[in-house]
Length: 86
Image (tube, rainbow, N blue to C red; front, side, top):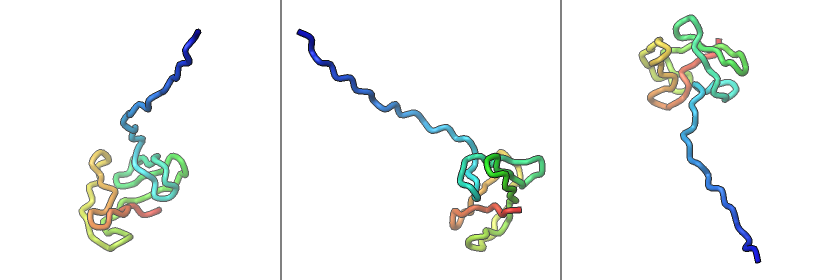
């Protein structure tokens, strides 16, 4: 007599891979810095963006750090995007 076996698969909790910054236009994580400091382009929708010092959402002023590795793309006040479509 064979016993019925129930096989259960447990979900493996892996940390999600960060593909890049999220594009404000299409929402996909394919925003990449260009050769020009403070400029970005979405690889998915090909929209271009510029990092601005005044938040388009709330008008809060922020200091721009144009280095691609340390650029802050979100407003410290309202957490909106500091990118403006070019």
